[in-house]
Image (cartoon, rainbow, N blue to C red):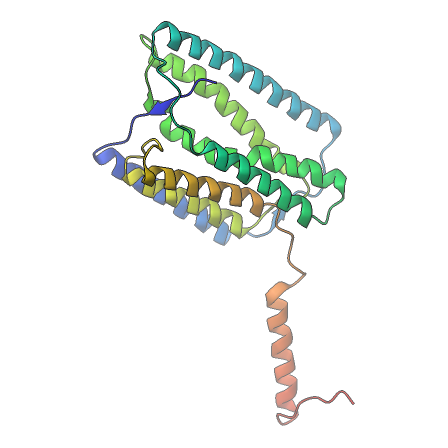
Amino acid sequence: MARYTWLSYGGSARIWLAVVLLAVAACVVLAGARMPMPARTRRWPGRATVTFMIVVLLMALVIFGACVTVYATQMQQENLIRGAPSDPITPVTLIGAGIVFFIIVITSKHGWKATLPGGVIAVMAAPMIFELPFDLLVMARTYPPILPYPGLYRALFFLPLFLVEITALSFLPLSPMVRLSRVTFFLFGSMLVVFAAWSLAGFSYPSAPFPIAMNVISKLLALATALSLYLPPRAPGGAAADRRAGAVAGAESAGRGGEPVSGG
């Protein structure tokens, strides 16, 4: 696969980027706080829907592979390939995705027919929770540009990549294990806050300690966001039911002059 770096944001651009990311993060957290939760998928869709989604994903991968080949070939012809840049983040992604799958499998109360596909969907979608907004931020700043049509070649690389990312994420609603909770919104908002902190340093390529740390932390938050979609539901009533039961017991005790209710 062709590897790319990107130019850092500078001047007021990095400030505005941080402001926009913080505003979006606030909207995400507010939506999570105000929306009725949890929301979940009730059952697996029909076989025809699942088959269609798999075909779309495979086609997206094939298109992306073909476009990357064209992209890399043009870079070679223009002598723009000097050597692969360092990539300290991919091991974090692979190990984290494996841990997400393991946790889902061992904690699931569903049968294997739902658990295994649900775990596979989580592994596909979890990195894309990071990659989709990340690629939107770096797409216009990728380097080196392929001349004389840098915009065309960026589109050739990123448009099929976006298709892969969106298709992978679209598998999430297909699993009956997936349920939106406030934790999901808060974790995704936290990832955007880390993006904002990263942008203050120019959202630079992870080749120095600070951008590496920001990249790793935001990637882990994306994986945690995906995992939160598979959190088992709380017992009916949850903590609110416990508080109501405690209030009733206290009222009964007060009605008996403060004496505890005897069981005998």
